[in-house]
Length: 296
Image (cartoon, rainbow, N blue to C red; front, top):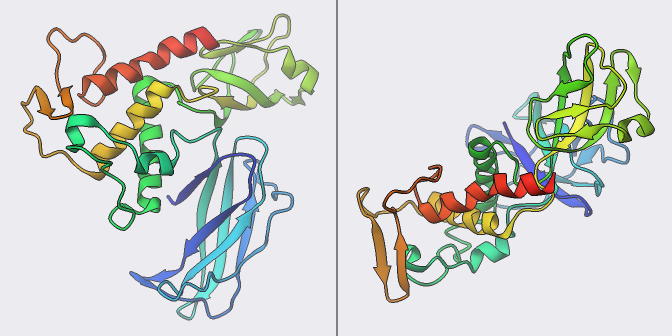
């Protein structure tokens, strides 16, 4: 599934590259048509309907459009349509608007990691480690952190259809740590912002002090941390380095030392959760639960 992740507050260019096999191929009926829809299937207001060529001579099939600035996290569906290689083609991609990224790519370029990287910034070479690849790793790391810890490290869009018990005023959620509810349909009744504002958010549930929930509940909400903790951002950079530059260190090594210091690869009697097997990374990710418990 092709997906781009962007942040609220600024317009951004979204690219697609038409290919036949592995060969970038320009459409014969430019410009490419695009249909951009919100999670409920309605058209995104103010969205472009075409994606002209980027005039990239090395990638003749590359087209793009500018996504208008979005004010809230969401997940958009994009259908691209063009005639390529004599055939009318339709492809689908997605754009997720997240509260923020784990880190800026520019910061990752200058990031150093002591003994592991043998001095210097390991991902400084943009030719060897292009932005697009590092962005892909960054998104993978965000997904993995949520998978490991149960908590999204930044605000992310969530939707679902839930089936509460009859008469219940408490609604268990499929995702942890709701931050705010965007829309709420209780049975056949769409709740007003006033009613939504009365909902009480728990770590894995939503409650209302006096109203019962009806089956089904259709809900849109924001999950995750309001801000990526600095310790988690640094751990995410280290994980990205591991992905971009797989380690040649022997699997049974317990530490790595150079002129800049020592990085421990294992700790005696280490009792924290093991996510990536590097204690300084795992310890940082363990703080997510502590952070969210104090912030919800």
